[in-house]
Image (cartoon, rainbow, N blue to C red):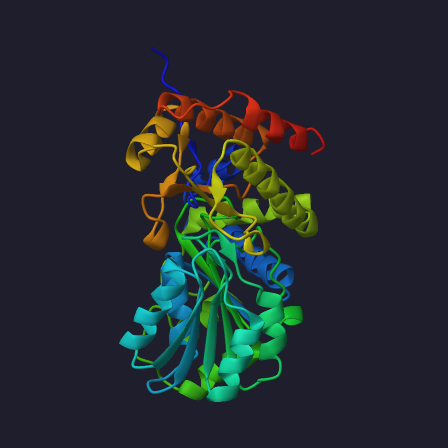
Length: 385
């Protein structure tokens, strides 16, 4: 029997297109190779321009979690006050990091499927002096997006505070303009909306953030210290830690694809296609975990229809056999549904195949659906794409 191709539809890693795969398959060269140094320099320049960063950008081998630690390590010192705006599981990850560093950490938590609001942030900042505020742009555990631009307007009234945005599940798929939104640090990684394999973290830092780093002097951290990497980011022929050469090439190709599509169109496409997928799933009776006004364009949580009798583990196993690998839910949503990514460089064929697999998995799980109903909803949207 021919084995069904399995689409990676989890919230990350996302599918990697052939041209990016080809870059990862190139013969590795020395990090000081003149052509590679030029390529790395172009990647850094593009990232600064595309995110409207007037400061510095760091591209370092590591995960998105390392990017979170890098952001905290270079903007805080023991005893600083930090406000963590958490919309779920990964927003909470900042709490442990800050506590371990000896920071005084307060938490603004949103109900799962919603987001902390600008009004809540403003109220909290009026009550206490903070050094840093963190916000998760898209919460991977809930599929909810935070209003980072509106929160940024609040932060502009407090120029003494460093505004950190976790863009792991957003950057490259949702608009993030550092200058316009008043953001001081954005962090992300390659395997989400950039559509590259895991392995690189990217951290943008505003001039204010770099000034804060300078004021800290020597920090306890080494590998994630901005000051260790700054000479390399200014001249990639210099050495501090070995760069992930083939992933830098892959990132360069991902950036080329993004620029060719156009960032505004890329952001709009994510919004359009997310709405189509959500509508298709709702046609089958599934419930989108995030409230409508907070729904992220890059991934969604789909809760099983009430009374459907669907067993979570069994359903996701069948769905994988039918060709779509999805992720289980976390925290409040655990066992109640699954998480599906719809970000990066996925095309119409991928979306159609994924929704077709969901329909088949429903039937095989004993949940009666009209085959083609969700696909019809999706196709009506895609026909105009």
